[in-house]
Image (cartoon, rainbow, N blue to C red; front, side, top):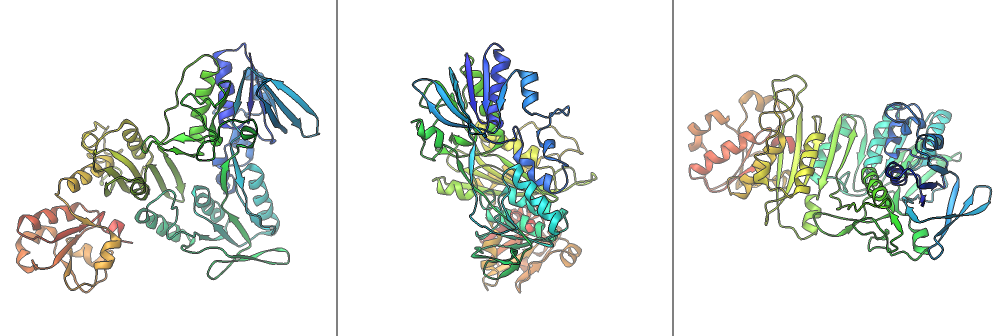
Length: 550
């Protein structure tokens, strides 16, 4: 049996390797238009920042072998043709026509064909020296060559997707002054809701990055043939510019072959990752997936998904009946000392998809507060009010976030309710979590809101209320915390420590809206229940506490 794979990225090579492991007697040929195979593009910002010494480090195995053409031939008996383009698929003859870099054309016969052509970067047409995108290894090499030759001082990064955020850190590590420009009203709009993004923005500024939002780049100026500045409402000096790359599925070959293209513009595949031709499979960044929460077709070009696709395809072209169920869109990134992560739907996405939701902001420590290296995590969950199921989560902070977001991703995919999550039997010891893990705390906050035990306002809402005469802000921190810590600057702020609240209830007006605040929200909840239990009708709490007061 002959198997031809078009594309030597994650999906293609995983499919080829899986198929050969299951059936060593098949013949597998992989066609790749570029010169690099099996490169982790996710690692390119770390290569630029000096964490990784060379491009080949991005394609090493755990034992140090480089996953090049020789590796796949000698270890797995897979033939890989680099610098070779697939130019046409003849489905009637089951033939792929190829063209090598020297112009020589040939044909490859197949019993099964795998299309893993990936995504196509839509790079801005800016013919200016010093303006770069970061999508492939060649881009990274050009950026480093330019840095070494011209020794730039000021950098502008346009856009704030994951790669752009990571690139801010990389350029800072190279000693550059970095300005990040985002056209949306907050950074990372595809990943984080606004209140979470503001926390990341503060961290970037603490690290020296000049963050500019609600600004669209309208002009890039040059001097002596090289970039000199970027104009986005005002002028920002720039010796080097990294601009974001829009990607779209690379489907030209599939479209030319008459395969069905889905509503997202990517190749349509069924649950077995078969295209509209049962002899042709497709996976990775060139296909669309099903969102398990909304049931809609979505385009999710992510490396982990591509690898899963490859395994499913490798099984199915060798007699298996493996299904790929769909995605929920889990992502995570390191940005300086912060980790940011998302799984499922954001609040904005949930509402746009017709969900009536409860949200909960829950800042809490990632381990027992008395244990060394404790850090706080800011967690947000999104809950479907109709079913009580969690449908989204975001996390930002210095603490251990990956395991929390993975628990929540599992909960979403398993369809767990906040009641079930609140009683998960998670492992506990002081070096690893508080006795109630962050995930459980967030679920309990959502349950309290659902059950009418806790009514909150977000920071943005409190800012609109702050100077009203009918509003009183009650800070329940201890006196020394109140005097030395972050304060809400307003004329109507009163400090009554929580421990003294019951004795001083007569000092508070019952005809005003009282908004209770504290550092993390726990004391605010206690105060809220005390006030409600003593006849105060108009009580709210600042959700997430001062941890979310930006």
